[in-house]
Image 1 (cartoon, rainbow, N blue to C red):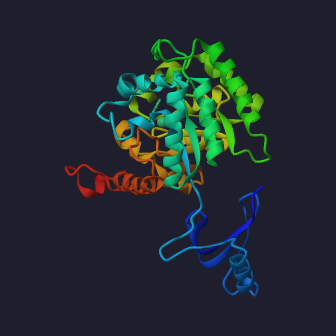
Image 2: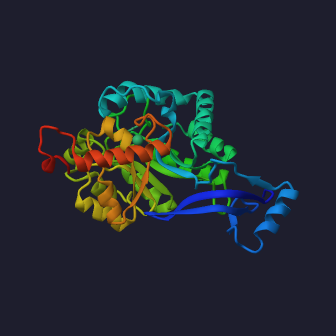
Image 3: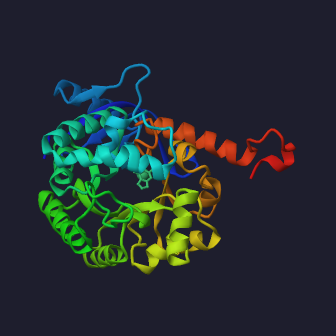
Length: 366
Ligand code: GUN
Ligand code: ZN
């Protein structure tokens, strides 16, 4: 419990998708839990009295010219261990990028000191960019992933943190993978319990997430075991879904169905599931995602590099699907969700306007 305080200034927020509300020169009363308890407009009869009392008590922060309040930004898909790779290694396709650059980098988080130092810098960097909530992929290492949760808790960032599961020896190198499915599931169970122990508040700031990296890196047994954990613990689930041609074809060849249908078959598609990318989902997949109440993390910048396709955001929004934005650091080179908003617009323009100048304009866009 901290001391309550007041903020005076102008705030922007979007109470509903498509509606922007501007609260000009309002007074925001923040309670001891850090929540907004009251908002007073300037014409409110108590406005001046409350403001002067707070000023006298040294509990008033007044925003200056050009300063505004915004709701905290939520990064729905980010790889914490890839922070040192930001803006680098963008020259090869996804399946090569993972083996050539990303798995070797993530393997370094067996070193807890390196993990603490890097994660601390990452969380500071995200908070400075306005990201007050993040849905993190970490690595296969439980100690380093617990350290990430502790750092978020200490710095006051709301975080959903996942120990990554990747156990298939055909897809994951010997130096960076879970020993086998049983160990992957047992480690995830211990991780869930440890994070829940770390923050036992009514509305915990840090929460555990079941995190199969993506279907190609997991055995059937691991996916099955993680689905059982999701049902048992009722916690969040995150994974990559239908991201690229290679990934989508891999899953179709192995199971004869889409990523979405597969995840549902393993009980991994729930109201608390976030599917990163989902560029190649069809109408049936959309229906299933929506029926389950799951969400998509749209990662527009990363899609330009690794997906060769654009997520149909407008269609998803029009049907009221749950969608948020992810930076996908380091598939995306920017940690800023403001950049994410800009890239979402560019991606939408490219999708609907088209990009091939050899086609007539009426045939160019999707
Ligand atoms: N698919 C599996 N792992 C990853 C990853 O680290 N980044 C992206 N963009 N896609 C993935
Ligand atoms: Zn990703």
